[in-house]
Length: 206
Image (cartoon, rainbow, N blue to C red; front, top):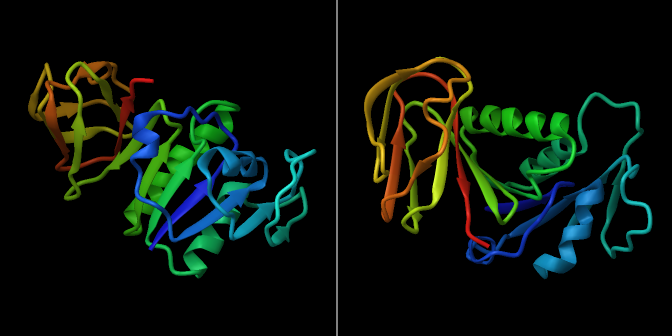
């Protein structure tokens, strides 16, 4: 079951955004509800402390939480999605806005992927794909598309095919810039790891 989780970053209407599989479930995390109209979706649940949704009007069931809480609004939305049976989580509005929220969303997405969920982070013009050992990332990208592999830990055995600068079994240090700003050759790009945690990011044409 595919769940779209609407969060509070930017959302740019691109072909890549419109090509996403239609959701079975839509959960809005607080101010992320503003993306519902642009996406043309009905929100099944609207959750959060509602500190960033002033002036938003949305006909959706609300789950209100106190501002002093131990989870972000996105984490609350994930909990609802999982309780309703979601196995594929697509975070829309994932990039832009507050850096702390974006970083928490990225790291949380990687954690969810380690738990066996399929996770995608997307803002239309940019996407993020958790890369774990034994779980290849495969993407069909136009030639010249910029992509990066961000090392969220020391990486062992990184292989990258279908790009201008391919890699074979490379070891990459945490936070290294070596694997930033590669380019798709056109067709399928494949990334795989033997050890470590990474995020493959793509800059989509507008």
